[in-house]
Image 1 (tube, chains in turn green, purple):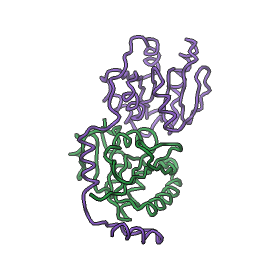
Image 2 (image 1 turned 45 degrees about the horizontal axis):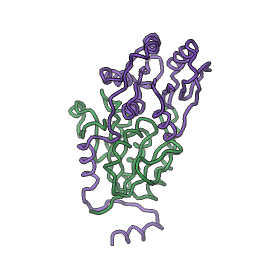
Image 3 (image 1 turned 180 degrees about the horizontal axis):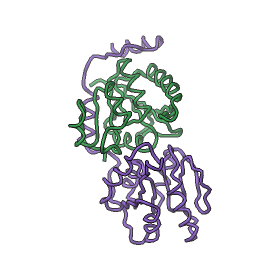
Image 4 (image 1 turned 180 degrees about the vertical axis):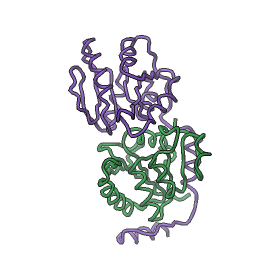
Length: 151
Length: 180
């Protein structure tokens, strides 16, 4: 099996904890973690971590910075697959990544038990695999799947 | 040590000030609080707005009790470390978050052992005054269930021709070398 280049993206806090819980799925591949918190260490071994700015609806201008950072990181790392647990940086990563030819996975946070998050809804067009952690949501959205929860 | 945590995005001074008042009244000097962008001046809490995830994880491991907003990071970490945790959801009608998802999260975890959901300041104070009858949460593994991991891995490892359309010019040789 060919070793894949994996870019793994999550904001700090709950998104990062959820992505860390999935780290066994990435073992044996060449991974680059991307997060918003300075000083974050990858969940396993000496895997590199890149830090990007956080963006949110309250600071629209920060999206421009985030897009530029993601374009640079993706062009340099050339991921085969991008996996994200959200939020804004993950959305931007799969938007840019999809255009540049990566396969993309969006995993909506466990916190969104009643509907998909806003960034999750926007991610649908760019995600090859669009996942919720709440199986009862699958029938509410076309193309939505679930592999269960990270807990 | 008791650790209070409300995430980094928004203030949640309704929780911070309640714990602070409780700490003052009970002479507790061992309460640390990660406050986010707070405007509250604490009297007893040792406050910081944020710290690196790994340092913070160490504090979570040391704490005897965690008091937090209903954020997934706080809840999952408390479960991983088998800590009792009190959670108070942010109320979006008071502008404490963008939407009501923390109330839904709190409701989903309401019956989890070791996880104590409080809805307001009065319930929080009451819970803090009855620390001795709290039990630790049941531990969970630090890893996602095997089914999730293996299905995600299967998707990642699917063999298909690369559709990457763009590479930095000085990286092109390297990527064609990798194909050979």
